[in-house]
Amino acid sequence: MKAAVFEKVGVWGVKEVPKPEIKKPDQVLIEVEACSICGTDVHITADPPGYIATEGTVLGHEFCGIIREKGEQVDQLEIGDRVVVNPNNYCGKCVYCRKNLPNQCENIEALGIDYDGAFAGYCVVSDKVAYKISKEVDASVAACAEPLACAVNGLNKVDIKPSDSAVVIGAGPIGLIIAMLLKKSGISRLFILETAPYRMEFTKSLSLGQVINPIEENAAEKIYKETEIGADYVFDVTGSQIAASMELVRKDGTIVLFGVNKQARKEIAQCEITTKEVRVLGTWLANATFPQAVKILEEEVIDMKSLITDTYPLEEIKEGMEKLRKGQAVKVIIKP
Image 1 (cartoon, rainbow, N blue to C red):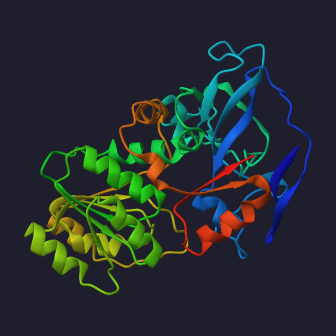
Image 2: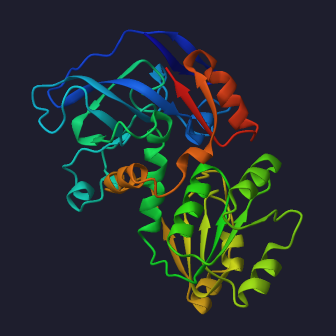
């Protein structure tokens, strides 16, 4: 079969590889219907890379597909079922797994990073990370279950109430998913900060809230003018804006740090957290939130399809990756 393979730093592309086979009794073989390009994939394929993957690995981890074969111990899934997949395979035995924190598993393995992923015709995963989803859901939409599950994990950490205000820093796919979920939760005043021209205009077209370019405008001044005291919640989806978040959040407000940027270093005055009594929360991956994500997609709670800007066959994956690298797309779907 054809697959997009990360060979080494700066070298990757579509090539012929053997079709994967079930090697453990708890595994399923999935025929891939659609796989979304994640920002992590863009970072892996950069030179120098912003994220490290295992050389020789098939990329891709946000996907849906049909089960074509299953191991003898698989009893909750059937051949022909349509599934989405938690790409972070947890051991289920370590201290964190036993604390019901599989996203913090000490032996976690990441699909498309540590082992072969889904930018391919077929993919093999453990049955414990596969979740059934209705065939009524568009395949491209179903492929977005993973980022949605991650966003839900972040929102589960806070208690949004009608009339609350919020700031989302970063209008990439995760930022826009969070914004959509916030609107459904009753947020009355929503501010979205973005600097990329394409994403700014795209976000404005969704009519989710006030879009602000913090380079060209004084974001704090605008937000304080609307809220008087600052935002109840600030979500940093870039991984580098904790200082800005502290400036925008009100006293006794909450900051949720979502994005990951390992190179980012920001100095903040710790006394500001103390004196403003600000809650600062981290959120990482999905934590038992795939069932919620599946339900959201099946019931069309948010318009996930509106975030899909481009669809490519596997052979043209580099074009899709480059559009994302240049900030000229939001959600790009690959259909093997």
